[in-house]
Length: 254
Length: 335
Figure (spheres, helix red, strand yellow):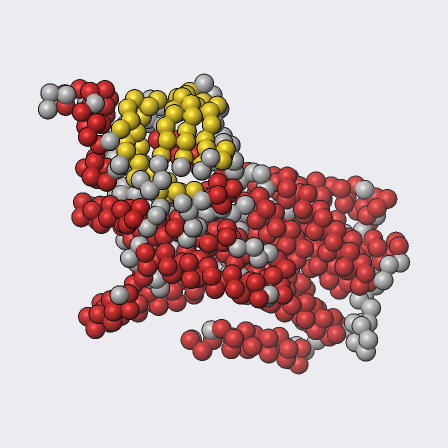
């Protein structure tokens, strides 16, 4: 579904992503792991169009999407979440989500001034999508709470919902379980599974190893911007290079 | 206070504006109110780009001057009828706004503000120095009042008051339409976080430019009305002082709210008027009041009120969810 071909990104001589090639299959959970500063988020930024790669190719469903603007990438069906989600704190959770489906609508200024049927239809559709997404992530009970007052874990789920409202095929999740407690992490992992069961493809960055090991179909390990290993959780667990780079040399013995 | 919300509140406000001239003892007060309405139209526009879209435009006053000068130059030097010049003011500010927006909106945050401040100063210099077009520091005198439309004549202060009020209501109505629509949601998404907005598939440049153009068109029409009401224009209209007045109106009333810019304009105008007797010392009173307001009501008057209301509604929601019966009901609804 997503093919990456010798992707490289240099910032003023610093190579943040170094000649990475890999592919993510439809209907799977792929995880990208690596120590801090390994280039994981930069990798996401390249795929999502936030940064233009210095060289290399990105293909999504066979289509070359290298260097496209983020809004184009989103329209093609790649949604992403950020490590922190900026919500409009004074509005309700549902209100925050309605804009998520805006990219699939076409109403412009004229529709607004004339209050056309298309606008009314699309506003109804966006509201419906927001509700569906909220139901999907199990947050319909906080629909009318203001965004400032929801918990960290609920915020993570809202971020999922916002990404889902764009009708994506592929979701890039940047630390979806960052800053939440172990029980909540289990819940979020179940939600990610549910996404895949409903036909979505997921690619995530995460530091919580036990979550990754249980959840991922495939793991890509980055270190200093380069891919050092790739494979199933079983293969990764046994890879000496990974153990040394990621877990520390003293884990090799274990 | 609940009955003040929504349509009732707006109707009361409109009614107050309609009967205000009956209670104003003289034409001076009426023309002060008319000018406040004109500034309110400009403030409404500023609030769209700054309050709803999050791009702090410091050239807004200059665009008001562009609108005013368009009317002044066309009517005085080229004998163009007022209403055609009025429409031209909208077109000229829109076109100018489009190009300046395209250029300046590439910058983010403070850089955008500083850039627009420079744009504003360039526009001021152009107006002051380009004597063959703008009459330079002498200004444009003898601008005709808006010509009558059918049986309506706009020669007297009272008729001008109602004319401007009509435009304010129209401007407010359109603004309400915009900010409550999907388009308005795109603007607010950009304000919240442009990275997130872009990741959600919103074309940043297009959205910001549209908001910018719409906002300066408000300034342009406000300027056009100003020209027809004051009948004299000087380059000072393009000075940054006008922009900062508008910023003050928006901040006092409540940035990013519909009613805020209106209320802010009226309150600040009323305050400066009632402190007139202090002459130069009025700033001694005015300054501290403004500082206190920014410290204690950082969201402005309307913003603070809306926040309180949202929090109260939220507490009610939380209480409802806490009662076991309601929770069970909720669970059933979800099933």
